[in-house]
Length: 103
Image (cartoon, rainbow, N blue to C red; front, side, top):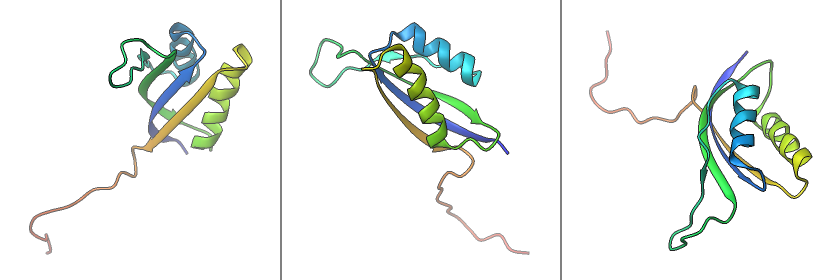
């Protein structure tokens, strides 16, 4: 079974092009990593952030995917920092309004 997710990825200590290439090669999707700036700061602190839609297959869970991503980048730079945030696109909460439709 596969599930579709939106993942927000934050990485420090890895260059932008390496991050984007890995996500494309591993998950078959494009992620546009941009420098993360904090309010009032004019320079980047070395963190890149990006969001992409990915499909996790073969029973892979979000934490498994995070570990795979993290291990890859930490093999390049042991001091790299990696954070992911996963949103299950197939089970989003919603609010429903209007008239009840009954037969």
